[in-house]
Image (cartoon, rainbow, N blue to C red):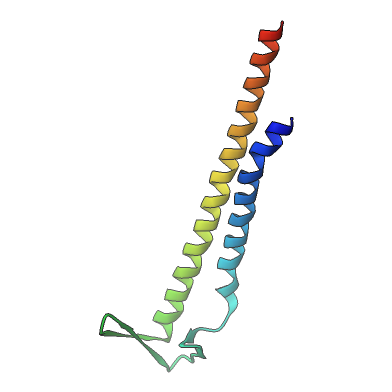
Length: 107
């Protein structure tokens, strides 16, 4: 039993981490659209400079980009939770199989 609990610690920690990532991804859902730390209004535009190239987004494009990033973080969190859940199931099943083999060997 002690060994089973020890094997479950890491998957449970990962599941909690995944829930935290999911929660963090949802923080920006209802917040204002920002550009460089400033709150944007519908008539504003935002300049992004990447490798010397400038790209300009209007308010709606910036809002869509924020939503896309937020959803990506949420899906990553759900993926972590799902994989951690599979690991918990695997640990439980393999522990049960191991216990049955020991019981059969002892009999």
